[in-house]
Image (cartoon, rainbow, N blue to C red; front, top):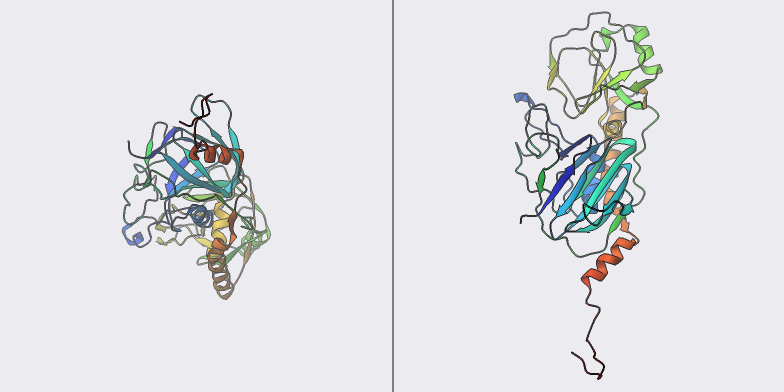
Length: 350
């Protein structure tokens, strides 16, 4: 039997994502990729994968998975969640694990991820990654285009996700210490490129006001509820390129921050663009979270980008040994030959 993870329940929206497929936007193909590439990279680092290896992106409510491999190593980074490992599909309770760490699992073990809190996404990496053919150089799932990932869609019950490795590397488990995934009080933006399409009072409301992430948000765009923005030159422009973090304002006056699955071009005026250093934190925000903006210069955005890259380089230094859990001791007993001989009542060894 080929190694795999079997999906018992898929969660609310679970997809396979990596760092995306840049270089094809001139063909109308979005970049896609992880909403939070920092957590994706960290999850991969915990299991020894390359930073851009495809992993599961879990949104809001997690899946339940069965290990159909001799053994696997998995990690969980991003939102806080209840992660429970059960000995088989008939068990009603198991061992709880925390996020920000790796765990070692055996054939038949069940991983149940509950509701997420404090953020919208959680990344689940598997040592070696998934044995899935890339599309245009990426295994990221683009649901609207039905490409990439597992059959171009979110997971469903009964899916069998093939794994590259049938066995996990033999070593102790690790955890991440000091990775800061908190959101800033205000997200930094560059004004424009069509900020002149808005009144001075609207610009003031945008930068001084507060929004909340709306219920219509998804991987394509984050819809914001808050101060209404008035156009002074209409709400249609000649369609032009959409950068990650572009904030479009359609005719209803409600901003939309365009995210990983954004379209490649758009015809609504863009009041501002979130700087690249703040996009991972923005991608973590759940529905109902508060959002506020501040304008910064391009020089400040470049400096923030350099700091982000330095922080990414530092992830490896945050990985430390994890204290063994009860489940780890059981696993080690299973692996160990604790009997060197058998004695009968006459005192001879078998």
